Image 1 (cartoon, rainbow, N blue to C red):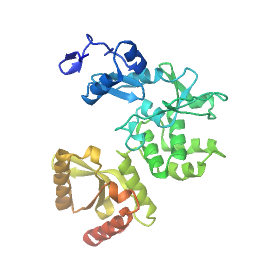
Image 2: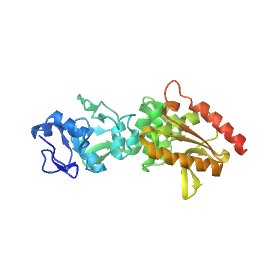
Image 3: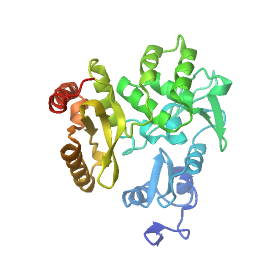
Image 4: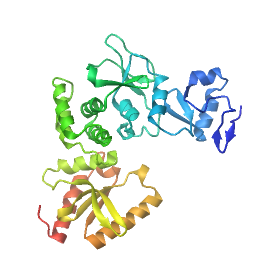
Length: 317
């Protein structure tokens, strides 16, 4: 069976629906086998946002589309939680590292006494108050602030802060509300991590790498506090530096592989050169190797960079 294409997309004359998501079981019932689905995925004609769920690649990402996908695999009495809740609510950067390259499992919990046992979901039981849960399009999901608190306490410390930042960026709650909410979790697993990280949450961070680099900076303890997305004047408007301290003219920028292809690298090179030459900033560029793993050296680079900036600019903070 060949693909039915219109302008490079699957069209309505084909065997699978193109106006909505569908499951593997539905595709199989329509005569489409796993090998053909895999071929369409490889060609970019289909997207598989969840295990066992597909949709035509031309469908624009939206909350409505995400809800439709989840309704195909989430039981009516279950509550979508954690990273899946963040994705559903519009914070995909809270997904696990590499989940944009593979199919993530659905995080959901059912009422006490019921547990999901299938390869699609990471499941179990969880204590949820009535105001911890909302319904979107027939799917029950933890509200943004509860989702943030769960991610902040249950994930690895690096990922926890980047998830908190991503949830803050949604604009559904502010830092005072987040700090107040943490008081509900007395006695919960890993609440101490949440209490330590919540005051650091900042929605201005644009990527997990930036969040983790900021955490490495704050862990140094005796460096001036950085401003995320520091705005500085440019030749044709404003430039934004990932992390910076205006008082000493120092900036730290994170170059992630997924956001810094050849064209972006050239733009960043020109931008950084202008900021360094015209505004007198010392700028260090960091990659994943600087902030992850046993050989990470972000703290050393940051300390040396700020020392250079102080000597060059003569600032005191």
